[in-house]
Amino acid sequence: MLGDISQYQQLSETQKAEIDELKQTLSRELTKEQPDMKGITDQMVKQALEEQRREFDKERETVQRDLHNRVEKVLKLEMQLDESKDAYRNLEATISRDDLKFKQKAQNLEKNIN
Image (cartoon, rainbow, N blue to C red; front, side, top):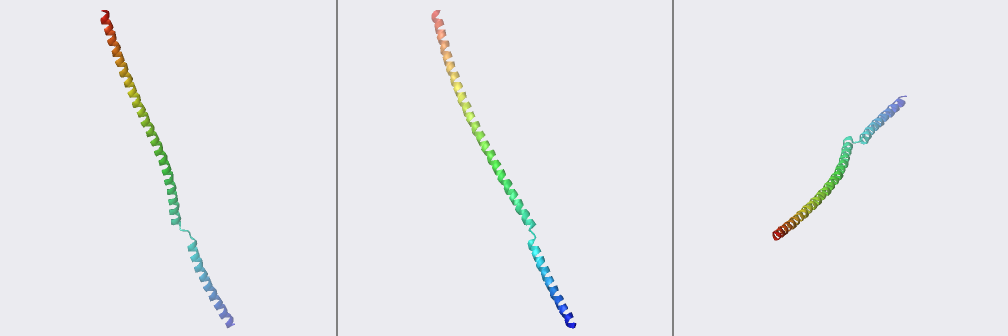
């Protein structure tokens, strides 16, 4: 009987030791399994910022391209306007010279008639 009790005590102590070891293993595994929420959150924020930065860069390039095209168009129109103004001035000057010559001829004819 004493042998049985001592066997049960040894078995009980062995099982308690195993239980303690399992508890320690469980707590180690639980700490390993818990995700690093701060790391995951930081990574998600970085990914979101990178995506927004890419979208911003695309939009900026589009706007810059559009602005560049508009500036080129305005410059072309200004050059055409300058050319048209020069042509108008030349035409006006030609008409004025011809008009002046015509007036002089008319005056000469009037003198000759008188």
